Structure formats: structure tokens, C-alpha cells
Image 1 (tube, rainbow, N blue to C red):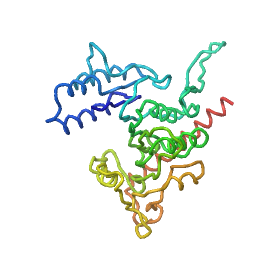
Image 2: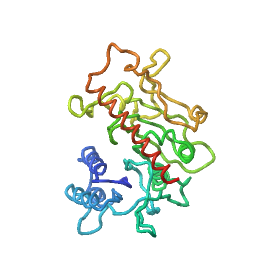
Image 3: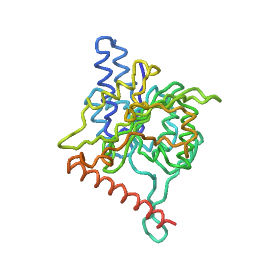
Image 4: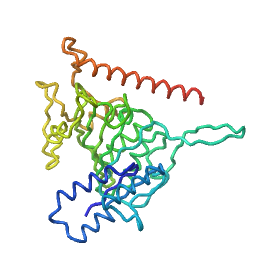
Length: 328
């Protein structure tokens, strides 16, 4: 049996989805010991917010995961503070949005202040107050030697310099960072924040670069969803799953080509990526039809939503800059 962790598990959604998948796929073959393992030894979670932690425990208990009166699979703590000691086969997680980690304290004048929180862990590749970069490093730590991860990250993790470039280079060196799914805005994070799912497999340490090719699926350009008129459905990801080719990852075929420049599935070699400025993984190539075809613009509500998202994203950027200037 395999083990699964989510170091910022919220109300336990990834655990419930995993349990549901395992139960449906292996319903007829699970023996008594395996069912016991699935209930009590498969999942490892951490949640920082006390109320969300309690909600997660109740959610898991109602779905027959863990024992609410005995050992529970989730701990209430800051997962980034220390190495928990366990190692797992899979990590599925959506780290909380917010570029900086911070602590609040009262100064000598009795005023409340915030200070960037930097996690200084010996096994981390670099120190940073960027929560997503720290979670990526933490995830690498808790994977076993051949563990696999799927992690939701905002765009800045793909292009940010400094610590961001260090983390990307280490991922390319020490894992097989084989897939990036570029998502439409508003799927995992708030309006205006663009998210991606990065898929990587840990590899035993050594001098050779473990990533050979990075496959990118652009599920963002010219893709529009709205909560009411056009909500996203599971079937919208069918083409990505087909391209991902989970039965044989090494038998993938690009849908992009010189003759089909709008193909959404494209391969980049690790050498091509290392030559990019800051080793950026923020790669896109599909032409935005909204900018090129003025006669076939999206519906007004979609345009309005895009404008609001872009303005909100810009406003958040200015607020972050203002915070830095105020602390300077």
C-alpha cells in the first residue's frame, strides 16, 4: 500500500479524493489488512488554522479515515517549521496563497508589527520568506527516494529570480520535473491569480540532472470559465489526461508542431530551459485570439471578468510593493 501526504491539507479534500479513487479502483481486491492500512496508515496531513484543522478531522472521520478517539492522520501545526520525520510515496497539495510568510508581534511601544518569517532549515536548498517556495522544498524533503508529487503553485514560482531560480534549478537537478499544467485564472486561487500544477518525481541524489524533458500543457490561453454560465467540468481536462498518458509517460506525443502552432501540449528539453533567463518555467506559445481577432471577442461578462482579474492582480502587486516600501 502507498502513503499520501498533504502538508497544508485544509479540510482534507485531497485525502477524500484519493480515498475515493483507491476505493473505486480496488474495491474488489482490497483485503482486510489493506482496508485497515487505508483507514489508519495511508494519510499524513498538517493544517495550521485550528478551526480548519477541526473541520478536517470531522470530515475524515465521517469518511472512515483515522480514529477520532485515537491516533489521527492530521496534526495542527506549521508544517514548514521542521522536518516531520516521515517519508511518503505521494504528495498532493495546494499550498496557501500569499507570497510572504510573516509573524505578528508587539513592539516596545505596544504597537503591532509584522515581520517576514524565514524558515532556516538545514535540508532546504535556500532560505526564503516565499511560502510556496518553502512548501516545494518541504515537499521534496518528505517524499521517499522515488516519491511523486503534484503541487499547485502560482505563476511567480515559475519565474521569480533569486530563491525561485535556486529552487527551480534544484528541482531540475534532483527530480524528474516532467509536467506543468497551466490553469485558467481563478481555479485554485482568488481572482487574478494564475495557478499551475507542477508534477515531479523524486530521484536518488547524484551528479546527473534527473530531468530530461519538461512537458507543458497550456490550459489557460483562450480558455474561459465562469461560475454561472460556463463552469469548469471534469471532462474539460480529458484532453490533458490523454496527453499526460498516465499509462506510459514515456510514450507521449506533442500536439504542438510548426504546422500546428496552437497545439497545447509541448515538450521542452532541460537544456532549453536552463538557457532561459532565471531558468524560467513560465513558458507559453499559443496565440491569444482575444488580442488577434477583434471580430470574435468573448461574451461581455467574460471580458468584464478578465478585466477585473487583471486589475485585481495589478492592485495586489502595488500593495505588495507598498508593504515593502513601508518596511524599508
